[in-house]
Amino acid sequence: MEVLRPQLIRLGGRIYRKNPIQEQTYQHEEEDEDFYQGFVECAEEPCDAYEVVQTQQGFRCTVKAPSLLYKHIVGKRGDTRKKLEVETKTSISIPKPGQEGEIVITGQHRSGVISARTRIDVLLLTFRRKQPFTHFLAFFLNEVEVQERFLKFQEEVLEKCSMDHGVDSTIFQNPRKLHLTIGMLVLLSEQEIQQTCEMLQQCKEEFIDDISGGKPLEVEMAGIEYMNDDPGMVDVLYAKVHMKDGSNRLQELVDRVLERFQASGLIVKEWNSVKLHATVMNTLFRKDPNAEGRYNLYTADGKYIFKERESFDGRNILKESDFRRGDEKEFLFAKGDSFTPYMRL
Image (cartoon, rainbow, N blue to C red; front, side, top):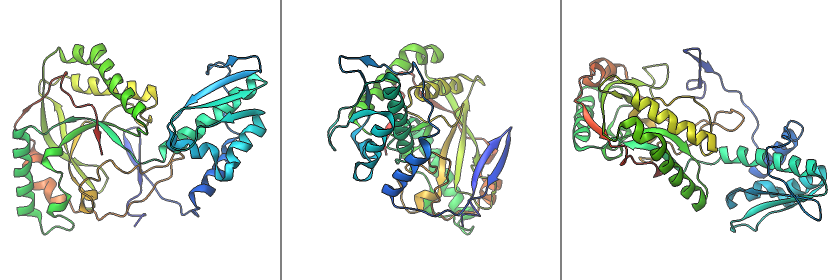
C-alpha cells in the first residue's frame, strides 16, 4: 500500500512521487543512540551564535528545553550525555524527569561548551520533529451560514456519490470544526504555549491590524480540490479560500504569521507560503474523527511514516458538486482581533 500512496514533492510547479524505501526499524532507545553517532561528525559549530558566560571555573551556557525531551539528551543508560561530555570536554547538568528547568553546560574551554550546545540543539530539534503535533494555528470557518452550506454539500455528495469507493459519512469534517490552517506546532510545555500566545499578540499589534485595516476580511470558499495526484484515490478533499475583493491580503497575513513562527522555531520550515484551504473530507476521520493534523508524517531526516488509510474515489464528486463549480455564497470571515490563534488537538 505504501507504493500506492508515496510522498509527494513539489519542485518548480510540478509534483513528483518519491517511492518509499524499505528499511529496518529499531527500538526508540537504540534509534537515539545510533542517531547520535551519525550526527556528531556533521554538526556545525557556530562561534558567536550562543551566549556563553565566562566564570571563575571556565565557561557556562544554558539551554531551555521542555522536560519531555530530556531523555534524548541523556540517552540509554546515560550514554548520550556521557559521550557528549567526553567528546566536548564539558559537564552537562540536566533537570530530573518531570522537572522543568535549564540544561547547563560548563567547561574549561569556550569552544567545547559551544560544541556541546550545538550538538544538544541538533538532538532537541530532531526529536521535537518526531513528536506528534499538539496544536495548530488556524482561522475558524464555522459561521452558521458556512456550516449550512457545508451540510448541503455533504448531503449532495452522499446522495449522488455514496456508491463510489470509500465515500461515506465518516470521512466528512465536523462542520463546527471547519478551519483554515496556518501551521502545525509541537508545544511541549506551558511555557511554550504561553510563548505562542504572546507571539500571536505581537503579530496582531505589528501587522495583522494594518493588513486588515481593523475591519473584517470578507472571503469566499469557492471550488474544491484534492491533495494528491490521483482523483480516483483521494485522501484529502478541500475547499479553496480567497479574498472576495481579489486582493492578496489574506495570503499576506497568514504568510507573515507563518514566517514569524518559523523564525522562532515553533513551526518547522517546510513551506515558504501557506496553502489557503479548508479540509472538507479526510480519510483519517474514518477511524478517528479528531485525527486531522495529529500525525507528523515525516521524520526529521525526511523519511515517510506511512499511516494505513482507505482512500476514496473523488472523480464524481469533483465532476458533479456545486462546490467544484464555485458557486458558494460568500461569508464574513473573521475580524483581525477575533481570529482564533491555536487549538489543542
